[in-house]
Image (tube, rainbow, N blue to C red; front, side, top):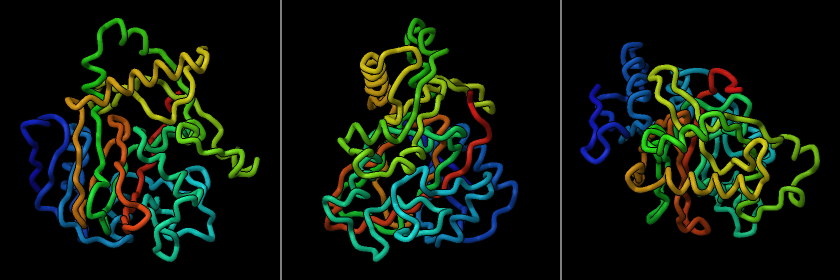
Length: 294
């Protein structure tokens, strides 16, 4: 196995060669991959023509899989295209046809184009995400990653001191409200309970590297003990700062790419493509976090 970095991202993003994810991996290789994730936050594996079972097997080397279901999307069980081991971040219905323009599932999924961290809205937020490109769009559809370690390191000391003890509320309701998606209109009161806000620290630390990161996401809707308008202005300013080009890697997808990223140390977002006409089949497995942060 070989992990290469690029001069423009010397400590962020690695390109992994010499690993076939269709095969069982030696435990030492798994440890090398895990160490590389902690060090670089984003790992890119090219030409990995894997199926769902192989993606699930690879994911389980790093921990328990976080089930995808009613607490992370609005797709009904009867309409699911994939098993609950995989999050379907495609634009396709169960018949593999693109969602229509006004389909609530499409509008809900547009939230993936906002800067976010996977499952920050859950009491135990996600550790790693693994996204496999089974079919990609002809144009657009890139994914951008931002290094929240470097973003924290480059903050002024007075801002670090200000945010180090801040607590924020996270919910999918907040991120979807940014798009104008009316959860009250589209969901029942019981379904809305699945998206009850949870509290997370605004700054967290990777216990392996001891580096602090800004735990940012568009799922944030309020800072504890702040009024919401002030909260949103402050969080939006932080997101704008933390996603400057110097903190970003932009990935142009090819079919059979697989990317692992560390949700403890990054934010990401998808970019636009012609989702009403093209089939973009992207399948994500997610490694469950290890503990509550509060």
